[in-house]
Length: 274
Length: 311
Image (cartoon, rainbow over all chains, first blue to last red; front, side, top):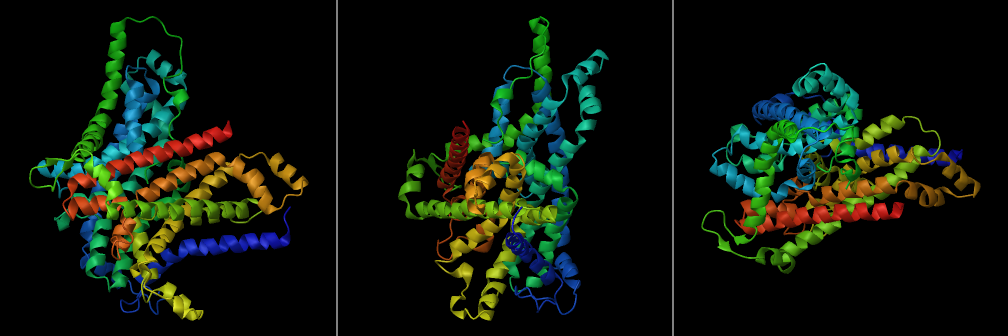
């Protein structure tokens, strides 16, 4: 048992830090619904609710376009990354083959190497290939980053799958392909959802790659990149900036609130990448 | 490193019937086919540019004209070039804010959460972790507003009669770096709390009881039971947050762009700045490669220390 004073002190500490954690987010939300002149970063409560900031951000700030770009890129990266990682994780987790360990370490390398170490040559190569300023310049490298985590994650899962199930499926004459998708993947759904949620968050929030790979084509900017440029141009208009911020943060925060355990499990177990 | 489990590589041994080597080769082939799509994308868009980065770092190149051989001079610059050296020094200072401070604060919060019955434990955990999932761009936008000359921090200082302390935080030569660092602290505390809360459940309750019988206060208990019990989690927390500190690009780019002057430049920012703003591509690659090696070494050292402590 602990003393009453200590219990009170504990609550005070926890509440204080909870307020600090939420305060900047709260400030962004209140600014997003304040009248444009009122939102100065002072984070005062709005006199009246102005939803117009969102439609202004959408049209003036081109957030509609940016949102579409981010959705397309995230969707492709999540789907392709998940399929590729599941297939490779299956091979690493259940098959015994020459060079398997070396190849697996090669994938692990990608978890540790920071983007800054390869983004520069990547830009020049993709520019020479003529795909900078297109979706591909963001999709392909981000699939590559996603599989380095995904392969590690799915391998761990498949290793824990009882070998008897795989053996039984083979006895029944199932090919490895059928075994993977029909036998192993359905019970793996929680692990796969965790992986998809993380890949979605990383892709949706990615900034450096977007900044480098979309140097001139405004119509291909992702939503975080759009916000950064918007900040440069309309720094005085904090209400619009805040509205844009809410649009970026909302999808991930919603997924986080509903799938919390997936987020936390994944980010703590494997993620060197942030 | 957190992610390797060397002992378990290689598949669990299973009674193996002698198979013809042709059959084995066929099975290997199937495995390669499953890995192929992932490996192809990964090889072309990550490994290959990484290798090219090492190669380019050995040249002076402006991105346009012919490159000239530089040997290791781009790497030597990291130590001799004042602006580069200060970028790495800034990164060291940021590590204090991104790693040391969050780990200490998280220990305090974990103690508050775990000593005695606390209502709303899940609620607190959710709230503390929240900054982790918000895009850095948004974090940077929010904090730029807080730190701005007429922002909420200065208003608060005014209100409590500390007008002398008010300043444009991100535009101040000596305060900009700590201001950026504190944003990092804000982001990373939650990660550490969640890690520690998971770890503390594995510490046998008897150890706490023994400490209490010995008459340990909260602080003694923390140092004698909690910290040693959480050694593994602390190592993971340090690794993740140090890596986050070294990778810090978005935050610096958006809040200060390295300024005022060069007071908040960091290696990750220098990579972008040199490659795309001042046409020193070779030097940019050398910094990127150094950063990768540094992250690798730090991860290795922290894991080693934690392992040795356990043995």
